[in-house]
Image 1: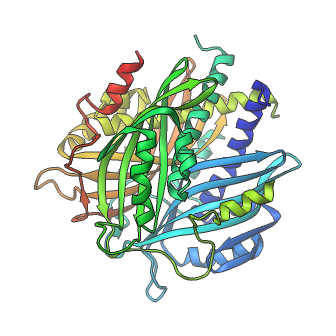
Image 2: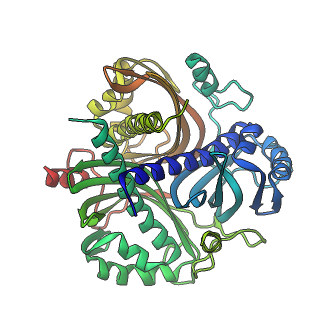
Image 3: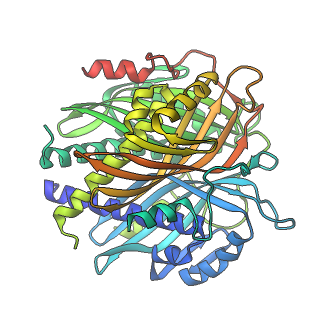
Amino acid sequence: MTTPENAVAALLDKQAIHEVVMRYCRGIDRLDFDLVRSAYHPDGIDHHTGFDGPVDDFVAWVAPKLRAIGGTMHHVGNHLVELRGDHAVSETYCTAAHWGGGDGIGMVDFTSGCRYVDLMERRDGVWAIAERWAVREWTRSDAGRLTVPESAGPRGRRDGSDPLDSASARLA
Amino acid sequence: MTTPENAVAALLDKQAIHEVVMRYCRGIDRLDFDLVRSAYHPDGIDHHTGFDGPVDDFVAWVAPKLRAIGGTMHHVGNHLVELRGDHAVSETYCTAAHWGGGDGIGMVDFTSGCRYVDLMERRDGVWAIAERWAVREWTRSDAGRLTVPESAGPRGRRDGSDPLDSASARLA
Amino acid sequence: MTTPENAVAALLDKQAIHEVVMRYCRGIDRLDFDLVRSAYHPDGIDHHTGFDGPVDDFVAWVAPKLRAIGGTMHHVGNHLVELRGDHAVSETYCTAAHWGGGDGIGMVDFTSGCRYVDLMERRDGVWAIAERWAVREWTRSDAGRLTVPESAGPRGRRDGSDPLDSASARLA
């Protein structure tokens, strides 16, 4: 039965789960692999196109791919969560842009649509991914159309000097 | 006047309304038309490009169009809600990818930007759409650039065997 | 320490901050510059590619650029907020479509990916931007592919006659 108290508890759970997904995206996009790992329980499992296995192996597999290209942006939207006590199924829509990188590494300027289907678990009060399926829906080549602006202005960095890092430092 | 109690009540209403919009998207993308219908009150009205009328007629109009193509992904973002008791105006931004399908059905690989402007009503405690305007902003042809990956890996399905269905079954 | 009370207070703060970001987007996309201004404190600072300065100057700089083209849609997603009392750092992902406009004003049909990195402050109970970095990540030309539908149906307007305006009028 829904009471105001458990409606609020559900909202807090959904927000916590949503932040897990968003921290994953930030970690991938900023090459912060500790942050990526923190989105999973230590024994969490990931299923990607081309990979199935535990999170540590996933990070070892994905990190060099990300370092080989210029950047990524994993923009998420729709986040629907079904809660069942300390377990939940979370679905998140993602549109991911990929750009830049050297010759000979295959398609680099492309955007893909995927849905993250996650079995989430709360352990010791902390929600994280127990098992993830990164469901690939479509891929669009943006070859010849995608550019990274070169003029002055706020630019994304993946070496700890992003504007986000400077702003966060001013909070401290 | 905003008190902590009604601030929380407003947040719960906004979340409930947001989930209505997201269930509509999931229903459309998974061809789950009962879910689509559940986003509207039984006498709800929909205005789309090429359609104006009650929700049952909308579903009858849109279902064959969706079945004729390979898939869709309605990725939503900005969700601003103005609450007025049991009524609300909800605006949601959506970027929708469409792909695949047979010859002779017109443009199939395209992405469009729209805003869902919804008059929402709460009846018997349940928020749903009373009237919707699907405001089309732009359309981009992705012809020749959009592909559905064919290699192994988690893939979207619209026949009840999506990874989301498997994950949800594990919750039960 | 997190107690239920301050967890809820944090959620309310995050929602308030998210609405600041979304009101900015609505203001830009509907050419409602009072709404844009209201997202910033009166002495707020903005850093864009090609602009650094106070919000009033920012509005004076951006308004003619927006009026010269046919329309924009600033679709936001990932919103991660770090709260510290009356200060916060807010990061928001945005994918922005731009279309239409006359000859001789440079690239008009394009989409860009950016992140809004915002130092938010609460003053007299109101959260707003104290300083913003609009971090440009990528730009994609959609020349020759982006169109605005011309057939009948709900269409976006930037002159106060958008379907959102009509719907809001019905709430009153």
